[in-house]
Image (cartoon, rainbow, N blue to C red; front, side, top):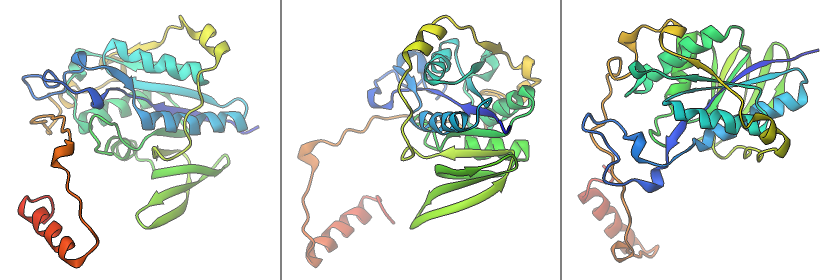
Length: 268
């Protein structure tokens, strides 16, 4: 009987709809302690794809992996409430302030420690960075094929996976051998709600907690030290109604709009 070992990458992110004056630290990193924390939305879409595989192939194991502060274990518990089997928290002071390069390195090390993995699923991107880089970087570090912008897993067997992906200008169907990394769009199927029985069962479940040393990570490649990218600032831009303008589809109005966009460097 075919069954799979699936890792779902889950991230606890600051709610970017509620940015305030303390959103950034003096070092230019996100001040996560000052912002409400939520389950990264597209990671929930990825979790649903994993759970659908589990539904179809009994014996499949779905494990969540997250990196962050100890409180990030909240997303692991949310995953168990929906049907995941286990959770791993990668947390260590040396991992703090990581950009996508350092994050993908640490997560890749953790995935190696997990052993045999058939499918690694994650959201296309996290709302606190919007880079869509971590999934592809993990695939590169692990030497695995990758499919990005996934909408739905169409077919799956012991050796291959077929995925529908949404691309600019249309839809593409891609087939690849396993193991593989797949990143999932927010337009994919929404994650199922909490299950009451699973909630009662997993209210006090303890998770596996790993440090950088536990996954044999080189501290020089972790956290702020291993991050060549530094965030200068984060701003919450609110579009005020008094700033709005209405344009018709006339050639004259379109010319005025294009000139304004070019003048303020929105385009060009």
